[in-house]
Image (cartoon, rainbow, N blue to C red; front, side, top):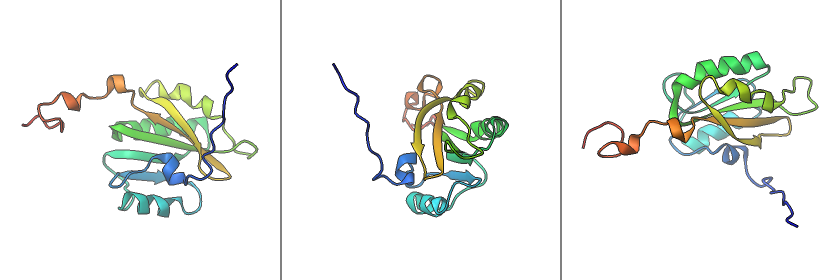
Length: 150
């Protein structure tokens, strides 16, 4: 009989769990916890952005309506390989939202959930991405960089 082992990610920082890479264009909105903005800037090696295309949006959501607004606002700005992290309060907090209730709202903007993680003692995140099956085929371009030139 197979047993399930639970993995321990306690040694990883929030930035590592969120998958931040150097040079990414990241926007952060809301109370995402102490120090996260600073750590994000350090990890991506640049300032956070407030406009334009995004590799990652990290948004605190306090209600299902807030989640809907985040999908509407950030989906058009996400690069095909980008992600929208919705940060929520953890169970036990008065403003707790079950993250599984956010998943149906991702269907309209054609996003799927593919990861959850703990951000800190009070917050956790759920990541939404563009499904691979509908991403633009940049690799099908002659030189692979998506601009159509050789």
